[in-house]
Length: 185
Image 1 (cartoon, helix red, strand yellow):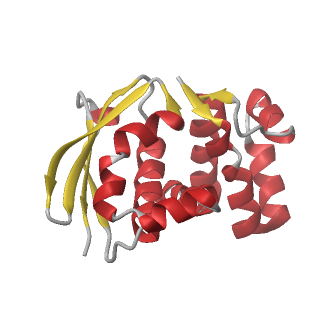
Image 2 (spheres, helix red, strand yellow; image 1 turned 30 degrees about the vertical axis):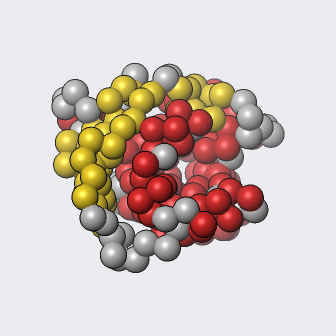
């Protein structure tokens, strides 16, 4: 399972912005040698990285060091990643798209960050949707919470207010899929 460099490179940016250079160095020193090596070198946006080394371990360490193990760190990191990644032309596209249109594009957006994976909208109502991950080789709770944060912030950028996302089913917990139940006003 792989994650795109565009998602990986936001992790050190987020840590430096929120916790400073000293916090970044503390986080970097907590990583295993191969992950430390990845984050000590230049992370390239178009390159694919192993999911465990590029996202899972670094985010787990982030949550342990700065959030007392809570998934708030993964959620905030996902929000930051959306804010950072949806700039320029992408931000304009998201701002011009309605929240409904953004949700409808979930199945095409997700594979640009994670490989192999599949996501689909399984239920759509007025200002509600259930977005389901149906294929994800290495599920992990930090990845689910990061995706939740990313979707939340992307919907806000598209004009949605009072966005609420609940993870109702989770591959991490043994379900055959992960469901994000999304609502907004």
